[in-house]
Image (tube, rainbow, N blue to C red; front, side):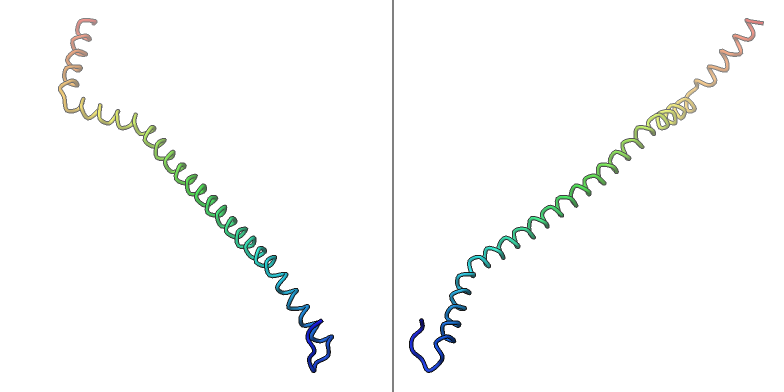
Length: 107
């Protein structure tokens, strides 16, 4: 029981017990706050990891798309380059001469 005061002893005992309860609960409340902060930080960590994975997925799809476009355009570019080279050379004239000679000898 508390020291003798002009107040009722039950009042001082009640206040003293409340103060002891608050002091006794303080470590548990502090640990609860720490656990909540840890859980929140972990949640944000996972959100950021998922966002990074999504960005990697989008980037890899774009890179794959560009690679497929380049693969499909190789034949077209090779054909265009080959046609340009043949058109600039005297091969068409030589082939026409050869065709004319073959028709003359076959007929």
